[in-house]
Image 1 (tube, one colour):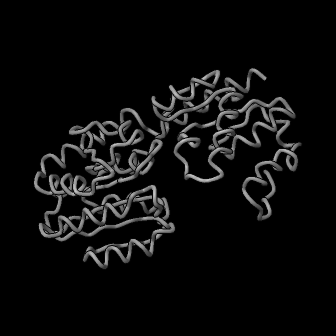
Image 2 (cartoon, helix red, strand yellow; image 1 turned 135 degrees about the vertical axis):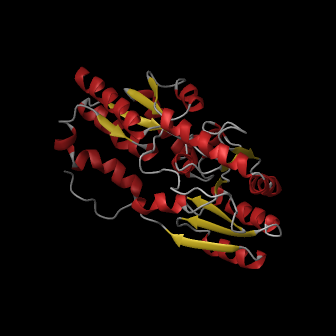
Image 3 (cartoon, one colour; image 1 turned 120 degrees about the vertical axis):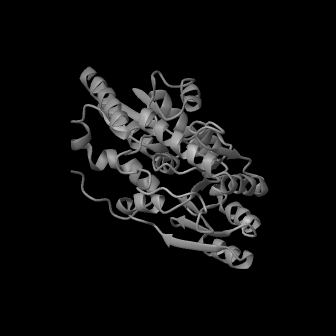
Amino acid sequence: MLAPDRPRPRGLRAITLPFRHADVLRRCGVLRVFQVTGAIPALIARARFGVPYVTTYGFSYGSLSEPGPKRPLKALVERLGLRHAAAVITTTEALRVRAARLARRVELIPNGVDSTRFVPAALPRRIGADGCLRVLYVGRLSPEKNLPAVIEAAAMIKRRAAVQVTMVGAGPLRELLAGQAWTAGVELELPGVVDQSRLPAVYAAADLFVLASFTEGHPKVLLEAMSAGLPCVASDCEGNRSLIEPERTGLLFDAQRPAELAARMERLLDDGELAASLGQAARRLIVASYDLRTMVGREIALLREIARRT
């Protein structure tokens, strides 16, 4: 087991890790790393000890990460990480095609969800049956998630029914969102970060799930909501399109148009049969194609294969 790191900048920790834990790393048959910063120590360990690594490519950091001076550096590390990996795991077909331009081997292994824990409510109810539409979001409260649009859309439809929006998570927009909701007269619950063991109950208490992000990789929260049988309304971006087939497993909308999101929410409020069918089809898709145990098994098999080569 590696000793805990002392507090220090993330980039510095990534660079120094292969030197501080050299004895551990040189005995590894393969390294499994994640995201851009994970590729840094893996590249160093590969150069020093010849240990191969497998990395995840779940998001295009070089083009979609937050603008600023770090973006070119992330793009460089991304290119190097993909080029020198023994294998790259991508979560969507679009990312597989992108990674294949640099990587020698790419395996498409989507994110998975425990479909035995995230299950439909025991007593499903008609959406908004009690006169209140319960809208759920789970994730970081940050600008790329486009959360003000959710509150704006809720304000547009509250004339039809009471709307309660719950946003589970933490982030820099918490106070801004609370102020926007108060001004718009929208009931907003901000419970903060919820323990993973309690999340299934949170999904079960909602009427619909909304993911309004400007960009997504392969969103685990959308997998969880679909596994829970919730009708889902998501922005029309690459990661969400990989999971939602419009009119069958969910509804898509233009992230730049809150009125379009409001129209999708209102449609589900008016058409309980559609809402139920979307949730049921989403659940079937998750069980058939995104079961966590199956995805983990495929990943373990890949790691064992690469480790045997060393």
